[in-house]
Image (tube, rainbow, N blue to C red; front, side):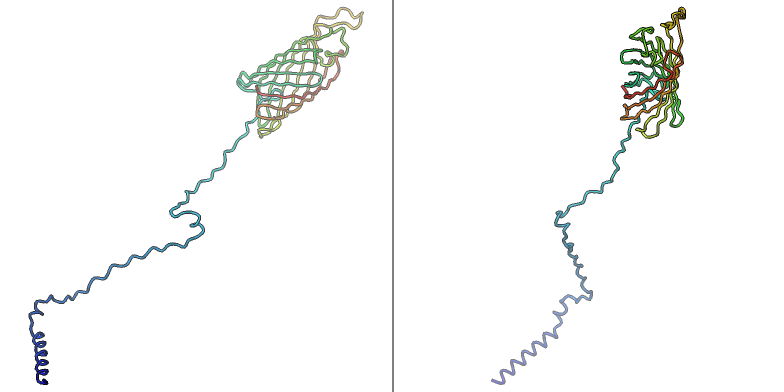
Amino acid sequence: MLGLRVTVLVSVLAAGAFAQATPDEAWNAPPESTTPPPPPPPARPLPVSPPRTSFDAAYPPGWRAPPPQTLTAPPVIREEPNHTSLFGGPTLGPWKRGASFLLGFPLLSMRAAIGLSERLDLGVGFDTMYLLMNEPRLTARYGGWTTGEWTLSGAFEVGWAFFQMKAAHETNGPRWMTGRRNLNLSPMAQVSYQGAHPRAARFVMDLGYTLAFDFEPYSKDPLGGVPPSLVLGHNVMFRFGAELPLSAKTSFVFLLGLDVHTRDVDSPVMPSASVGVVTNL
């Protein structure tokens, strides 16, 4: 029995030695590679989500803020200056119209005018001493010469007056107070000053002369003889005031003045005062 185990062990060791000594399997086996294997591709980093904030909670993912807007200043609205004047130096301008209404002492006055050119205005007017004297008038103004904030124009008015009473029966009436007679010619110079602001007040001043044609002279003295058929009266007028613009077309007007009469049958000096409006028609 012992000899059989020894015989089997020797046979196994001999077969293993024979297998290592046989070169067929080693010859047919592929040669061992000396090149190292390629490195594995680098791993892509996983996206890291930013920490969530209150902004992310208020707006969903993918929301984009709108492009910034350029802030622009609101348009500047410029006030239109008031150029409508019937008592100051500025003329109305081509085909522009103006009108005025004055309530005062001793006269109530209305005027309407239209500009025929840059320097010429023509118009009509009506003066009344509250129906005791009524005088329609034609008016003209030429100039509008401007130097800085000062303006100068020349004006002319002609009117025919109608009186409720005859001259011989009148005592301290409209003739005595106004110095006017049947036909009245009144040239005058108009000067005004206005600041640069569109709503600046326009200060006005008139210096005028009235030549009155009296076709109804009468004799106070019974022995004075027959009166002449025509007597002339000479009056000097000074007036000042202001046109206060309320809008681009309308102004409030107030005027103060003095009339100096040279005939002895008229008042030596008569003050005047008027308030009213001037507007662009």
